[in-house]
Image (tube, rainbow over all chains, first blue to last red):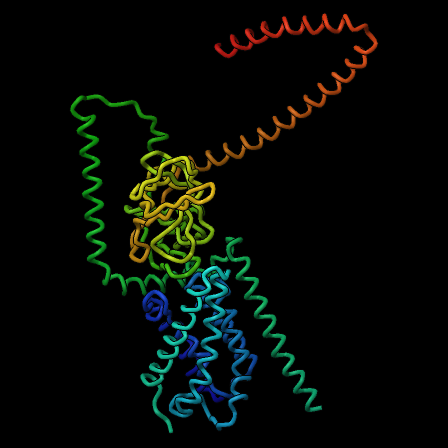
Length: 167
Length: 333
């Protein structure tokens, strides 16, 4: 990764946090679908990102989101978890040669099999740790599934809006 | 060698992963116990300032609504003032007031800059902090009802436990017949709470107002909480659903309640609990002593002939009424 790329990623880091806090935090559909579009940052990091850097970035990103949501530790836990799973999942999906992660490059099929499970696990962890019990199991599962779809669609839309098409 | 290095590299990733996850779990588990986490909460200066900017953008959407609310509150306060003047003003008669008690509540106006209602533990952030006199444990209310209790304070901001939090219990009563209970949120619906511990021998009607009881030093008495939406008789207590009067989705300005006598009340209550324990201990000691004494007496009685013991009993009976009279007169004095 060269220097300009690092600066670009740092800019993305803050951009995603700002979008999450200014916009996505207030987006709630039907009181069940929440948007955590900031995980897009972890999903779209370059392929050659060092695993240790990935874990640390996940932790710091989660902690910053936690500060704004007053859910100390919960987002950090979920982010570190998917940051750990990410390289493993990419190697599983290695059949298709991928140079960098973006929906324009990888196509819909690869991108959704890659990002949907990670977003789902992230949301599952967040909602269940937050609920601290299985008392409202059905509601929590509905929240997890609907939020996963919501977040996924926003991650996709943001790519069409902000990432220039490179082929 | 290469495989060994690879193994170490993988192992390093895994150990960092475990360390970070344990750190996160530790933060989750201890976050409500310590006040020291102000830095990682919305009360943090930088987080607070960003939230304030965010709020100033979204605020315009609710501005009209907020105006209506303030106008309503003004009208209500005007009505109460005129009522009071009507009652006391024209007679030139002023009841004596104990100003330390009538002026015991102070209100600090604050703006909500961050709010959530859909989590299982909700918090509110306000733009007033230690600098403005906000302290941990103070109550937070609006004109429509109670909001919560201050959790942590930084110099400019404060984080508040919303009533929609799993660890908040509010001492409350039903206004119509002063039945005491506790209000608790169950975690699913941000518009409803449960009222617990109301015994079944009271009558509960749908529509009864539920207000704060005034048995706690946090909230002033008679602050609205909600209205009874439905009540079912469960085993020993009623199962009461209360519909909140406050719309937690639209809270924008709140009052932080400063009870000047709160510290005194809490200290006194703790002292009495301590004293009670001590007096109980003393009582037990006395009882044990009496037991020992009576055992000694029995030993003596056995040595004496039976007639004497009967006489003793008679004497004891004749002396008891006199004793009773004595205690009665003591009580009257």
